[in-house]
Length: 364
Image (cartoon, rainbow, N blue to C red; front, side, top):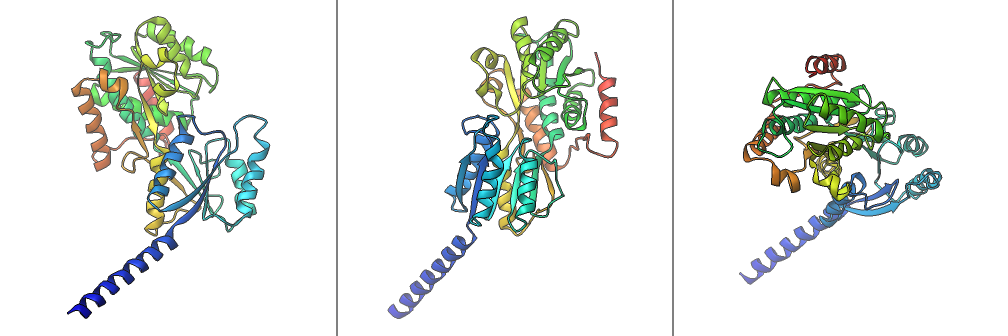
C-alpha cells in the first residue's frame, strides 16, 4: 500500500514537473517599446498595466524600454527598435500609437522573422506578415457614450442640465475614423430618445484648443447643448474650457480617463470618458495566441465584447449619474456583448456617407 502511495506521489510530482516545464516553455519574452514615458495615465500606462498582469501570471517575461517622447528623442526610436530586434531575444516586440507605424514597418521588413504588435494604429495593416495591428471599435465606444449622454441630457435634476434635448460632439476631422465615434454616439443617444438632437462640429485639427473652445461656446449658447463629447485629441479639450468658462454644462473625455489628466477645475466638469482599454486588449491577444489563434499580418478590431473599449464608471459618473442612467449604460454593454444591439460603423461599406447623413438629420 505504501509503495502504491509512493508511486502515485511520484507520478503526481512528475506530472506537475512536466506541466511546469510546459508552462515555462510557453512563457513568452516580450519587449515593450514606449515612444514616450510611463506616467502618462493614458495608453502607455494602460499597456504597461496589462503586460504587468501577464508577467505576474507567469505568462510573459517583460522588458520595458522608455524611449522618450520629445522631438530630440525620435531619432533613437528606430535605432532602439533595430537593436531590440537584432538581439533575437524576444518572441514579440510591442509598441503603439500613430507616431510609430513607419518606424515599425521599416523594422518589420528588416527583421521578417521577428513578430511585432502595434496598438491603436492601422496605417500599414495587412502589409507585413509579421505584424498585428490592434485597433478599437470606436462605434461601440460611441454607442456607450451616446447612451450615457442621452440619459444625462434628459435628467434635469442634475445641475447644469437644461430643458433642451441637445448634446454636442467636437470631432477632429470629417473622416471615417472620427465619424465612427460619432455614428455610435448619435445612434446611442437616439436609442434613448429619438427627439435628441446632436450638434456636430470638426476642428480639422488635433491641437488647436481655441477652435474647439469657440465651437463649445456656440454650442452652449446657440444650440443649448449641455453635454459635449470631445473627440479631437488635445483640440477637443477646448470644449471643456468653454463649459468651464460658461459655468454650466458637462464635458466627456475620450480614449483615456481625462479626469486623471485634467486640472482639478476641468476634471470637476468631466462626467466620464470613453476608454480604449489597451491593457485589456493585450491580455486578450495573449489569450488568443496561447490558444493557438494567430493574427499576424492582420488588423484586429476589439470592442465591448473583448474588453477593448468601455466607459469610466467611478468618480463623477458614480456620484452624478442616476441609477436609471447607470442601468441604461449597462443594458447597452450587455446588448452589444450579446449581439442584440448592432452599432453601425463608418467603416462599413457606404458607412461614412450614412454617418454623415445621420449627422445632418439630427442637427439642432
